[in-house]
Amino acid sequence: MYRMILSAAAPLLVTIAVQPATADDLNVCQQTAGENPNTYILRGIADFRNGDYDQVISDYDEAIRIDPKCATAYSGRGNAYSRKGDHDRAIADASEAIRLSPKYDNAYVVRGAAYGRKGDYDRAISEYDQAIRLNPRAATNYLVRAEAYFHQGDYDHAIADDNEAIRINPYPTAYVFRGVAYFRKGDYDHAIADYDQAIRLDPKDALAYHNRGDAYFHKGDHDRAIADASEAIRLSPKDAGAFNNRGEAYEAKNDPDHAIADFDQALKLNPSLEKAHQGLERVQGLLAKRSNPGTQTNAPPR
Image (cartoon, rainbow, N blue to C red; front, side, top):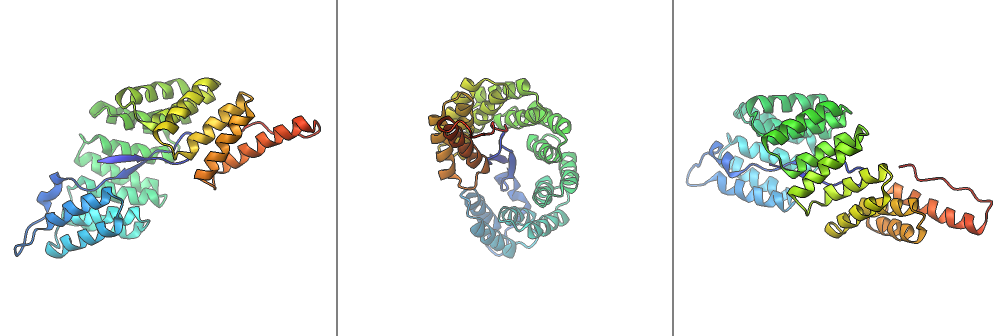
């Protein structure tokens, strides 16, 4: 399984985080001398979902100690290393999982994700190709490949993979991801339609509201942009990007007080958010210009 991670871009870049092995994978590991490696794998799954990657690694170390041929444990440990930023160890562990179990598609996905995080999207796509050959019915295998195509700027291939993922399993994140690809192509109407569908499937999907508001902004519909950014903030109050986007929409509506408040809040949540710094400077410059008519300011670049 996979989940979406938010990042403060506009629209939000969607990164699909490889999730740990499920109980379905436990038959890969064998009990020895009265010890069961699957106990540690199940613990590792829980620790992974809690974000405790050091403990995940410790859990899988124990599983491997009990069964050195446990492909699931190597794949899971590699996934944890990748989430910690140690992509070389992730690749090494995924490679060992593949050596032990060449038809284990999740190990190719883990290795592909590590290559992708290293910026090697060609190798990532090659790994995802193999995962799809092994398991063409897994929607998430198409989504991770779509992400790699997306990062290469190949939005048409990304959309094709998203289409296949949606055909297999039409869940909200697939629509959100396809919407981002349409957005990058400048097709805001198709992007909005995909975000609409994501919201129908999951009315609490903050990412879908965030991105739909951004698409409305680019269509010049600032009121809808503000409404969607407000809902994204209600659902995800620490989303600095949503505050920034709403601030830009208020700025476009010539409402400097609300714009400044939102840019300020965006910077409280993420002091390095450059777009919020720029927005705050623009609006403050506009107010200064009104007080001193000889001053010039720039319009928002979005």
